[in-house]
Length: 104
Image (cartoon, rainbow, N blue to C red; front, side, top):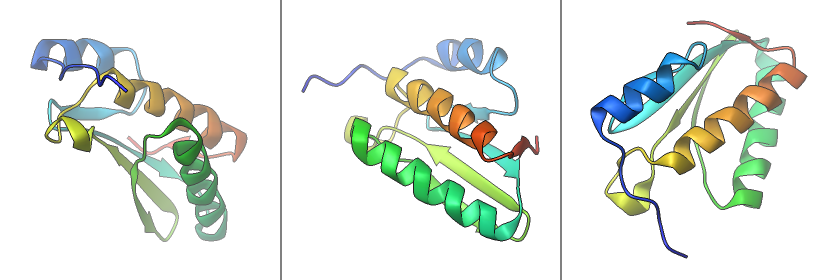
């Protein structure tokens, strides 16, 4: 599989500009969601299953009432690529299905 190239800082900023709650830089993008603790566990499990399905994974941080997903392309020296924004969009859809809201 050919991996996409890293995005420039300007490209990352342009992509983030039209995604609610997502922040980041060329090394990682991230978003916090507000969601109950146990619902957050279920959200993480579903995001992990989607990551396995598409072959790209997010880091997850579960707190009481909040979940954070961080995404970078590890195989491209931990830089942000188009793969990360595709996964971000998938996470947003899954989070909406779970009733999570943007905490950012």
